[in-house]
Image (cartoon, rainbow, N blue to C red):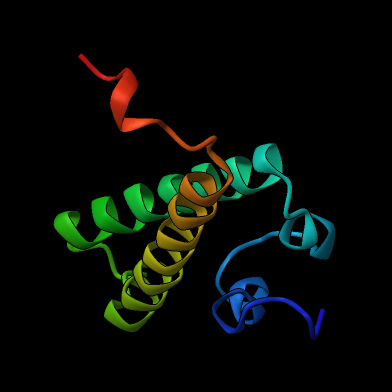
Length: 91
């Protein structure tokens, strides 16, 4: 797990997630990880809005930081793997 990006190394402490899910760096694996992070953020946000006793701002902040970094890396990798477009082909 040492070859993973730094922001993903703390993920097992933030979510109930397996190492295999974190290490799956395929398109579908990363999309599934982002979906889990989004779901966890929605739940955390709802706890905060409701004033639930289990809400922790530090946990929410850490989840959001991991989500943001992974989303940015996912988008950057997706754009890098897209075929180049020719400016002459555009209308």
